[in-house]
Amino acid sequence: MKIGNAYRFAPVLAAAIALSACNQSQQAANPADGAANTAVGAHQDAREDIMHDWGAASKEMNAMLKDPSSFNADNFRAAAKKLDQDAWVHFPAGSEGGDAKPEIWQNPTAWQQEIDKYKQAVAALNTAAQSATSAADVQAQFNDVGASCKSCHQQFREK
Ligand code: HEC
Image (cartoon, rainbow, N blue to C red; front, side, top):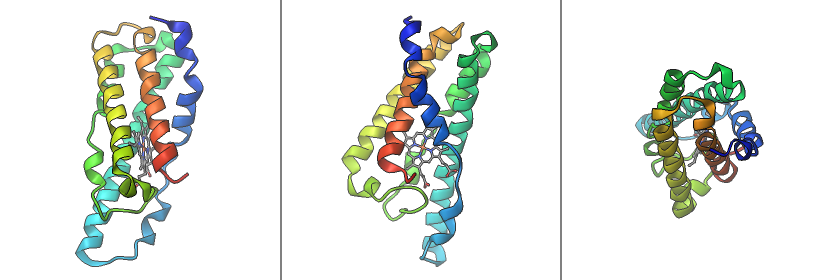
């Protein structure tokens, strides 16, 4: 395990978490009404709830990695597992809005690439977490997940 290398990515992670501040302010801007609007609102709420969970779980894991003496394998595993939720089903065509950029629906290939990157990083983190006994065992995988959050937000999320 290359510990020295791992910390190189800490700023990426800090940025990903800084982007996590939750912002519901654009919810009211939906022009549509009736049943369609309810469905769209439900998707927006659901995906924002999941992302919000991810922000909290990432913060919890990051705290353990910043202070390795506080590393708790069970808690880390539980937090890593929370990242394995299907947020993507809540971005159907027609659910534009919130802080989701229109590019998600305009460039589905690039969007799917970011999703795949995220899924791979999360799978690797969960695998590493299964046998981890210290922060060093999951640091690199956690950094990869943080980089994936940040990369997608830069392209597809309104600041
Ligand atoms: C493939 C793209 C993608 C990935 C990967 C991704 N996000 Fe997001 N995230 C988004 C989009 C798009 C939004 C805006 C959704 C909206 O407002 O409808 C968002 C919103 C959020 C929000 C704000 C939620 C709210 O309450 O408004 C948080 C927090 C968040 N993401 C955290 C994370 C974390 C932490 C990770 C990594 C563990 C992550 N995201 C991975 C695309 C992504």
